[in-house]
Length: 416
Image 1: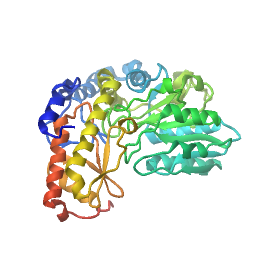
Image 2 (image 1 turned 180 degrees about the vertical axis):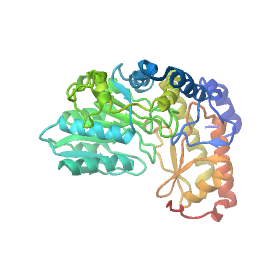
Image 3 (image 1 turned 120 degrees about the vertical axis):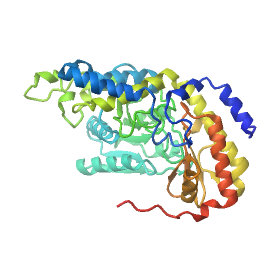
Image 4 (image 1 turned 60 degrees about the vertical axis):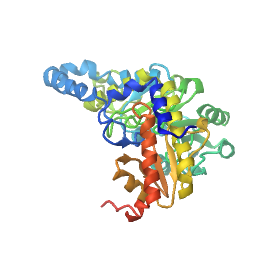
């Protein structure tokens, strides 16, 4: 790969997604490579939220419920078709990722009576492991943690060896939060199905940048957040997916009125709604949902395949420049090098990764840090240019060459 800035600019000139950059705020204010933690604000979002506030709430009041009550399913169908490769009526936007994970995990475990083991990845995102442990403790189940390499991710042979007739549900992330290592949804689904288990996927670290193709893979269950690549805003509601053929078999544990049949009849006993609606709980956060809908529609318009192609190209540039410029300074690539095994972010390992993170922020570059010594770069394909990646890596090279990072604290301040 040509490491020149001119070559990066040429890639931008040929980028079919280049027009989407102008639909986000702040794109010229520094170099933002943390879209895998929190996506940028779409220009359309403030007006969309204001419309709900001023017109639907301010004027329509309760008369607006005709639109609001369908939000969860309406936005879910946008995500299903444009982002997740699922069918209409299989995705619902509701609650948080952690709550959705809990709901589907309990429902899945109950659907496999006589099986007493939950499988998860020892290096998965903390919430996923915590929820699995909590459900197991409450229901007398056993957790079987599968080891995974911190950089290359889960070995499917190791996973296969952990699957037997005792396993009820397997909980895995499609994209490893630290390294970006990608897991094959279809292959894992096949392995689990052969063992009689369900798989519950966390798509948080790839949704909007990495294809999931849930229907084609025959995936059972999935959850994911909307505030990263989907640009739904901080704390935005999450989504859940339940394969159509499973929906009537599962009953989730939080019996709220938005999951009930004929909810406005206010019946005396809980009777779950048909289809994916039964996985709702309480009144949706209407204002936040308006922001999620904007982000979801932009991603669907861009197209998940085009986003994935650009995401791979952006991360390939990160890796090429790291090899060209940073290896001599002790930086190593801590993500899979093969594009088909990597999500849309790259981790770089260095003993002073936390100091490098601080030095970059002071120089107008926003990455993030992951323990133990990883500098994580997430160039979101909707709005990140190739020259943004080049400039960020050039500033990192300068920091290392000058040793500017040595003056920064070696440890994060503890939040109290």
